[in-house]
Image (cartoon, rainbow, N blue to C red):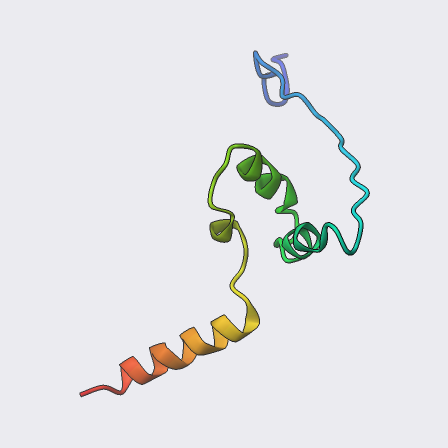
Length: 80
């Protein structure tokens, strides 16, 4: 019988668990950023932040911005 399942990776990933305690007043911007992260997207957001990336690409658009963008697209569809 052959071996079953996926072969193990030669370099196994390292798992780190980090617990943050954020102050609601001093860290309000971080709390907002992490709470707006998409489901199961906080790890990617933290990795990008540690690498100095633009974090807006990792977040869903704000509700007001999404409505405005949708109205703009609707207006463009009816332009002659």
